[in-house]
Length: 83
Image (tube, rainbow, N blue to C red; front, side, top):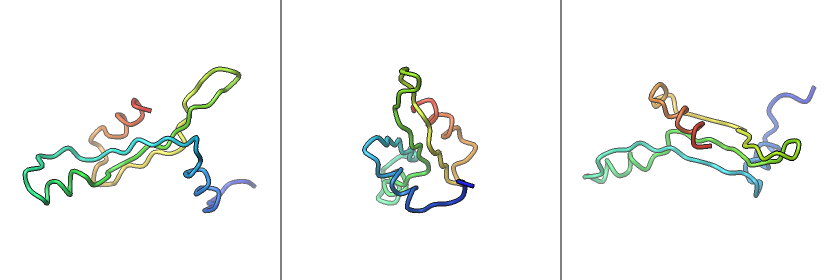
C-alpha cells in the first residue's frame, strides 16, 4: 500500500543533500555548566526542503518533532515560521 515505516527510506530522506534542518534548543541563563548543557539540548526540529512545484519555488515540511517536555511553548509554531 506504500504506507508504513521504512527505516532505509527515512534515513535516505534525512541524509539527502537537499534536506534542511532547524533545531530548537532551550534558551537559558548559561551561568553554570549544567545550565549550558541544558541550553544546548535539542527540544525540537523541523526537516524541510526547497523544491519546485509547477515551476514555482516552495518549501516542503517533511517532518517536525517537539519533545514532550517542550510542547505547548510555541516551539513548533516558531519552527514552522522559520522553515
